[in-house]
Amino acid sequence: MRSRSDARQTIGERAYDVCIIGGGATGTGCALDAQLRGFSTVLLDAGDFCSHTSAASTKLVHGGARYLQEAIADLDYGQYRMVRKALHERIHMLRSAPFLAHPLELLVPCFSWWELVYFTVGMKAYDWIAGSASLFPSKMLTKAESLRRMPSLRSEKLAGTVSFADGQFDDVRFGITLAQTFAQQGGELINYAKAVAFGKDSHGLLALLEVEDQLTHERFEIRAKAFVNCTGPFADHIRLMANPALPQRLRISKGVHLLLPLEALQSDSALLVPKTEDGRVIFAIPWLGRLLVGTTDDEAQLTDDMVVTPAEIKYLLKYVNQYLNVNLTPQDVLSAFAGLRPLVKSKDAVSTKELIRDHEVEVDDVSGLVSVLGGKWTTYRAMAEDGINHAQKALAGRQAACRTLDFLLTGAQGYSPDYWKQLARNFSLSSETAQHLAEKFGTDAIKVLKLAERDPQLLQPLVENGTPIRAEVVYALREEMAQTINDVLLRRIGVQFHSWTEAAQSAPIVGELLAREFCWDDAQTRESITAYQASIQHLIFSAGIET
Ligand SMILES: Cc1cc2nc3c(=O)[nH]c(=O)nc-3n(C[C@H](O)[C@H](O)[C@H](O)COP(=O)(O)OP(=O)(O)OC[C@H]3O[C@@H](n4cnc5c(N)ncnc54)[C@H](O)[C@@H]3O)c2cc1C
Image (cartoon, rainbow, N blue to C red; front, side):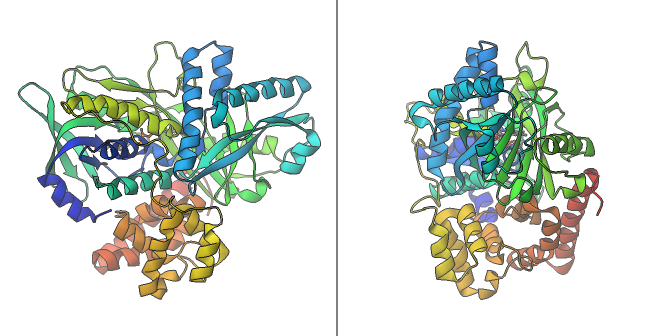
């Protein structure tokens, strides 16, 4: 990516075919799709790229076993179609960035022979729908085999488990990688740039977007022929900005996840609790050295503070302790995060749990705005294809076919699961650091390590005995448009997901590297370190965790 200031300069001067508003899964996917079709494309986000829902998912590339269960129970063709589409997208997502996404075994614990048969039949149907896109076949496991695969499972009353396959990924790095790939294809993008108003032509169609730079508070304009609204939970706001007569379409639901010590699971497989007392599904998944547990599903407002509360922690820990042989308390929570699901309203659904996670492309006849609403991370590519198929109708006479199916994202070229060994050997890295770099950047890890050839200090870890190294910070600032400590520690390197404490400890060194790169004075550096550490304290305090 170019520097933010260079991007800002160009964007204000050029006119584009397509302008994508919102840089989460949907927006980065749409931007890459449009650029690959040969349309000059610009992408903007009001915050950092992937700073909302797309960083707060359960990190599963899945059709959704629960949705299939509901499709069968309610004879709901809409749910079935959504599961089938997601299962077919799953394999393409895994192929396009194998360093960020891979197959995962999930175990469904069963407490009677009837349950074992029921879930085996259900998961066989899941395999059958996936067809040639199946990852590996599901099977019924005996109690002994289940406990061999997951020794921490509570064995009392356990009849066995059903094993099935889905995919798992690093959501926020996937989004950053999509953005980076888009930039490499000649796309222009900018973060911290908020869409605040539209300008229209003499026919009332959108012709320009007024944007407020969130770092300098200056305003500038983007001119484009087509505007695509990919703002996830904020989509109604942009729709009404284009045409105040439109009805609201979204319902918002909050979902939280906890990160716990991986020792609680003692397994490479994940646990799926198929039905909680209030009809939810809970996952406990090994993810990047932690046990990721989620999620909740509660109606929410856009203005809610995105913190995890003691009640939410209590709810999730109750199920972890019930199904695993552990007794975890809130003090065991190492990190946590919350996100808002953008769900498209249906007339009948009473609660947000009942809303279908499918997407919808809306074209407003009055303003021409294309809105890509709802959906899932897993179907981001299909959503983008659908969205750009509609947007290109505004580009008179310029129809082009979608090219994203199995398009390799940057870092995927030449990648193999053993790639980290090459990095460890050639750059004398510990296995942990080499694996971490390979998992975050794929073969682009070389570009990160090249920075350290000129400045060997950058090979040092961020915190003593930690895995991430300082070169990643400099790479994030120079090549990935990171602007703040939060951008670096949460979305580029992932330290904040791993541990709140480790993230707070890493802040001073990240602040110094930011100051060096952006020529900050001492006061500005101190202020940003203190602000970041205070934001972590706020998360810990809101979660009711004693320090
Ligand atoms: C708890 C939870 C768990 C989930 N788990 C999974 C899962 O395991 N697998 C799966 O496939 N899906 C999952 N999902 C769904 C998936 O995460 C979302 O569907 C997807 O991330 C939505 O992406 P988006 O780009 O539409 O929205 P967002 O990621 O929210 O992006 C919207 C962007 O628009 C920007 N924006 C807003 N207003 C403006 C403006 N005025 N100007 C410019 N930019 C603006 C925001 O800053 C934001 O970055 C989960 C969702 C949740 C909440």
